[in-house]
Amino acid sequence: MLSLERGTAGRVATILSGMGLSRDRYEDPLLFPPGDDVERQLGFFLSMVAIDHRTRTELTDFSADVDGMRLVGADLLYHLGVGVYRGEARSFTPEWLENLTPGKAASLLCFGDNCVWDFYTRIFLLRDLGRKMRVRAREGGGEVERSSILPDLLLVRRVEDLLENLSNFRAYEDPVRKKAFLLAKFLDGRGLVRLEGERQVPVDNHLTRVAIRLGIVVPSDDLLRKMRDGTELTREEDVEVRMAVREAWKEVSKKSGVDPFTLDDFLWPFGRTVCTEKPDCVNCPLSSVCRARSTGEYWSEPKHTLTWYY
Image 1 (cartoon, rainbow, N blue to C red):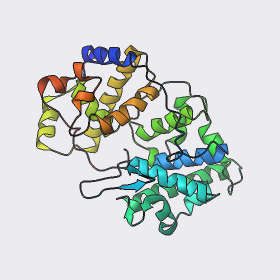
Image 2: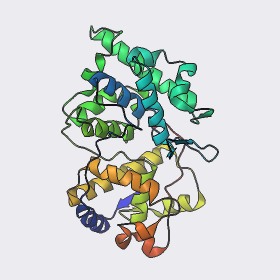
Image 3: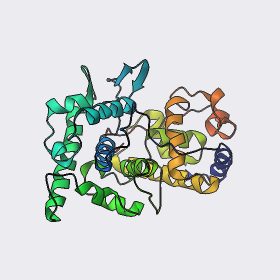
Image 4: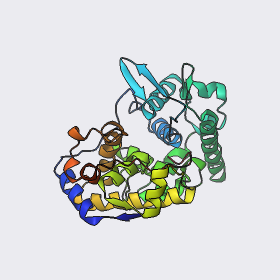
């Protein structure tokens, strides 16, 4: 449904290679926990990424003013997570997750009366994490009441091993592995583990929209028709589109010499603040090679089924 345009990918890569992009370390205290106990940090990141999918719909708005800043979507979600982390010493352990109730989850998923739209789905995903970690610990002869399963699960040497360890959890079952690669990026960036192996960008709607607008991927006639009509893609079509986008950004990464995790650190906020539904082309460093800018057709990402994949 999408084909790679290598020439455009090369031109985008040339610009990105000269931008001096660098890794985020994910240390903003509004959004991330302190660098204290490693197991607690692992539990936080595993849990928060598990519920880090679309936070707003056409009918809901998940945002709030916090300390003079407007936190929207995922930023607000992680801020709430930090509050729980600081306030409950046993938070984000397998036992805590498995026994999470709607009452306890409110502090994680709601700001006042404003709760994230799929409140109960996210509780299900967290409880699934806890239950399966405790089963794994029991089978391995570990102390089920402790969080000691987390280092074994997450502190691995290769990206491929991390993906395999996560594959049994419902939150991480996406074939394109958006959440799994996002977790890998956080763990590596925080210095909790240095991951070798094949890294990929965590593909969500922002990275898809930017790729299509830039023209590093070109939609087929059938996909263009569906985009014009606002036709919802099937789950299988959505996976096909995001896999093609992932390969396109891999090509850009290779040609630019910019690591995929560093590339995502740039692309995700870029898609949220610059290449939005109403793009700010004046302040876009990629406008000179952007297909949408040259044609005047500013496609949004294809409409997809609401999912917990991304």
